[in-house]
Amino acid sequence: MSDQLTIVLSADEALVLFEFFARFSESDEFSLRHNAEFIAFCRIAAQLERSVSEMFDADYREKLYAARDRVAEGYEGGAPGVISE
Image (cartoon, rainbow, N blue to C red; front, side):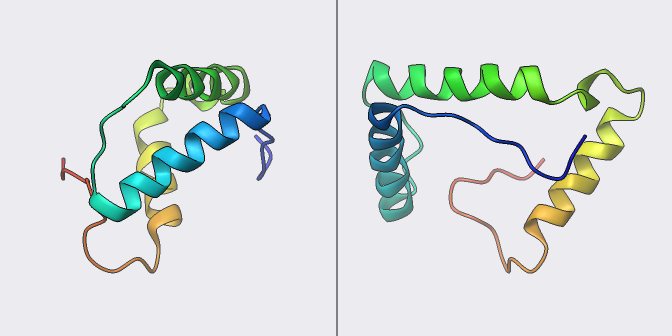
């Protein structure tokens, strides 16, 4: 897999998701308020499904944990809405 992926959003999907993320960052509320939010997330998930092949690898869990560590590197404390596993 390359180091970067491109995800395509319509202007409407971007606006809907912008509002969701703004609401989440202000109140830690991770609940959907409109079907459009769910649909936009599903469209992103579908694009990721077509782009991420690691899910079929035998060492998927290890790759996932390593990716999480790299993405979160340098972030101090618990992020809003995160429930530790």
